[in-house]
Image 1 (cartoon, helix red, strand yellow):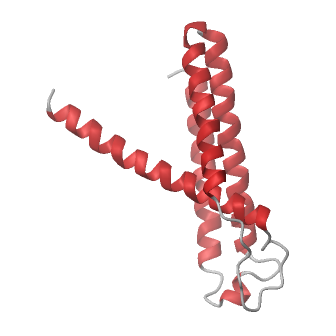
Image 2 (cartoon, rainbow, N blue to C red):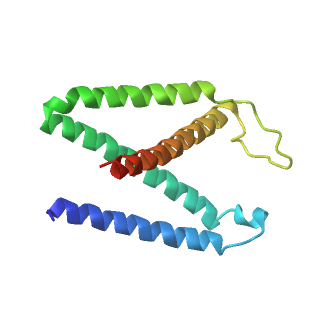
Amino acid sequence: MKLTGYISQGVMILLMLISVVLMAMSASEASDEVRAFAEGSWTGTVITWAVVVFAIALFGAVASYVVGAIVDTSNLLRTAIAVVGAIVLVCVCWALADGTPLPLVGYEGSENVPLWLKIADTGMFLGYIAAVVAVLAIIVSEVVQLFR
């Protein structure tokens, strides 16, 4: 295995260990919902960590596309099509998202506004689409292997 393989595997193991520890600390913190979201709780740290891991994944995906396009220019058209397709998918999910503020009893925060609700809905729609595509990919790969 090349050095880059060892480095990426080590980074993945480190990210997984940090994630597991944070999730365990958040899960063991409290069963009381009010206390779980209190200032200084582990739940806020877990949410921040999820955003950091998402940013790392997004940066890694973009960097791999750029490096792949530079190394092998024959894949440049396929890379451009994939990027345009991803942008179109995000735009369609954004258009489907509803930004209507939610009637939350007892909530005094500032995040119940149309922008954040549209961002959350867009993320949920993208997650649903990714889950469906993953299940379909598993089914199709199993059927293809069955007939080989």
